Length: 204
Image 1 (cartoon, rainbow, N blue to C red):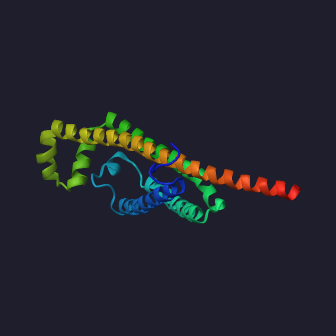
Image 2: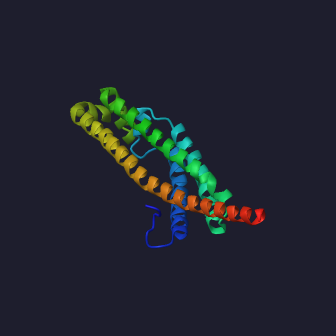
Image 3: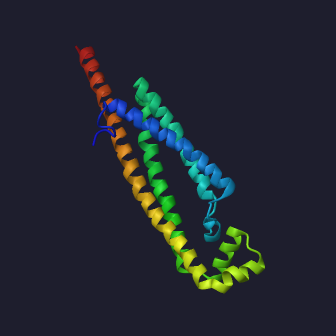
């Protein structure tokens, strides 16, 4: 596959896909900021022990990628190779780090799931729903088996969602990376051919 949009020219395909990716990354910046400020909706990360430094790292990575994609868009429009080249390295690094970060989260979640205690369950429901001591006794301790099952089910769902997220991410971003890389390679080859022609003409 040499382009991500088969119905248009290779240059236009690279440009369109890059604009779409840029908009998605800009949107993700707001999601990271919201997470850093408010935490995850289910409050699972707090219980599991996943620190917010991962979100800060994600925010930093996305900011670098946004700058890289902006440079790439300008490079494609102006057909300036020097603005396109950083993409080849930076975007690949981003893909690797994203997978590593999410794999780390899955490993932490899996280890926590295998060692869940009643104390963890009580802490989750009291933090998530703001239960008082009396409510904890009435709503949780009196029905501990059911609450533990529900809590573990949430963790398992997160694991499956995390795995699906990594797979979908790799499919989309690797296709985009290699097809865009293919266009940049064509531009490099074209510039090299022009340079070779000029060298031959100068030699004559």
